[in-house]
Image (cartoon, rainbow, N blue to C red):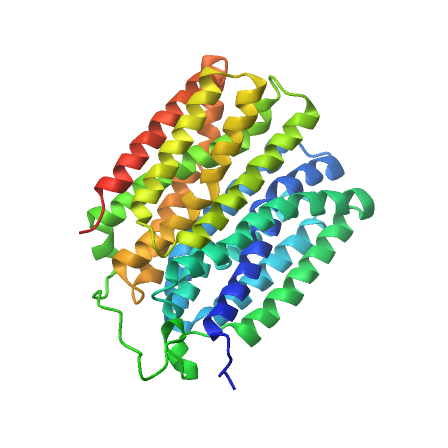
Length: 402
């Protein structure tokens, strides 16, 4: 029943793309919308409930380790299914809360859901299905994250404005469950061999065992210079990236009108999508570490330009250049780990790496905020962020596994 003209692995990629889209639209990018709506609806101070967003990030980061291992062992079906239920319940519940502690509980559930629908979950699910086209498959699935970021916030804000917070979140949660549960049950499969196929859709006559990398334990992998370099380099790069995106509106407001701020933020997101589309085209032919180094250096140039030449044209142009690097810094992480540690160990090894990376990433908004207040502007934090990106680029390239 699974002998299709299209290799079944590409249906797995499509399901992962949809999962990432929903996870990012309702989880990562929806979090800020929910905080604003909770404050306006209930009259709660942002400070009272902002810890819920922190809880969301911490819970999802800590769960990335068991999520990768669980998919490796049991397959994606129970993990994606459980994540869909948690995300749907958290989103539907956030619109019904009447006390701050209930908001924390809803964000806790969403943190579980986002971990189960994260890049770690997506890349681990795809891992057994591809060898030759592994980079392309992960890059295509990661497009869901970009699309989710582009459409999630506007749709939620539109719904809240027209139908109200409670109705919008109830509908969003119901749609998430209605889409993710059938995908988990009907589409997700563990390994191609389970349905009589081989990686990349190779016929039995030409199928070969391409996995030559010995299994790695999490502890052994964490001791290697390669994985430590991924964690330090990409953790630093992601901290700089998320911090900038968090403060971008405030930075732009110093020189641009509201209309141009909105246009620039949208252009940054569109540039990130185009950057990911370019990676889809060349992912299986490039040196992933060299590409990551170039992306980090390009981000450093953009940040330096923003700091040293804060004119309207530079603010807009440099933001778009920075946007080109955003998606690729995220997508290249699993590609590198998969190539250097193999498919068998990928889930467990990348779970450790992504947990550390996300915890470091969470420092980004505070890094910019504290330095902004201490230095009276964004010039110093932007220059320091550029220096950190250069350091991250060096770390990524020198920690290459031979």
